Image 1 (cartoon, rainbow, N blue to C red):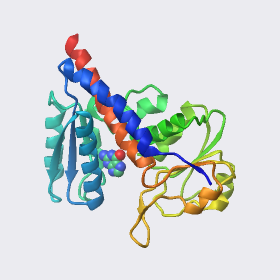
Image 2: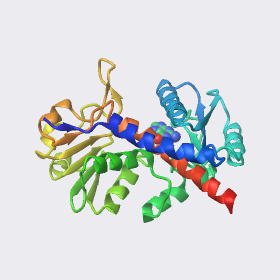
Image 3: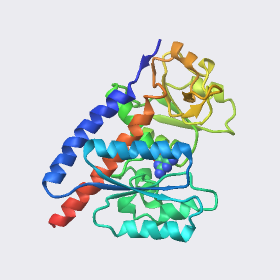
Image 4: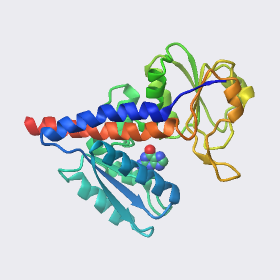
Length: 285
Ligand code: GUN
């Protein structure tokens, strides 16, 4: 049986620290503010946005939802982003993805002021992550690193395999592991001999988007397995990318739900507090 890495508990500890920081910022006259844009009525996006707003409320961050209809035009959406860019009381702007297909998500991300881009999706922030010099954390990968740190797992010199090469998870995940001196292999849909590559790994991060994709025969006995997946199985139940039978082979495993998911929001809150702290500092100068 693998040890379970409890994302709920670790996230609660991170949020508790953040709540104290928010209290101090407020006492000094700065209330951190996050604006969340949601376009259309995708049910999964609705759940994510509600969780983000709830996360803000719990630690005293002001949040504002801009809910736009599915037929919003690109110009209308960009006008909202531009208005938020100039708002004094808004430290972070987040546009929930995916957007309806007629909208250009790259242009929207590019329009967000980099110093308010708490998702760290803007090219300027991605560049900072690449060179290892950044203040906005890529939320999901940073959440994974926090889980590893707080579980006493070092990746230094270890073989780490990231499955999935998305801009949101896979690519920045590889960078964060690399910054901590892991030997990183990125796998994707065209990777040959995936099973053999995965079996070399001391740490596997699965961000594929397919239920039960990582099977026990892909995992070296004693490996650490981090499951970033959020899928629905045939019965409609929430499940990750990792087959539950991996529990018999791995040394550590993150559950779904209750593993990486709660950490992503904790890191978003952390970025918002970072942005507010920066604003407070500038106001003093
Ligand atoms: N959609 C899925 N994950 C994310 C995320 O981390 N940020 C945003 N903005 N949209 C998402």
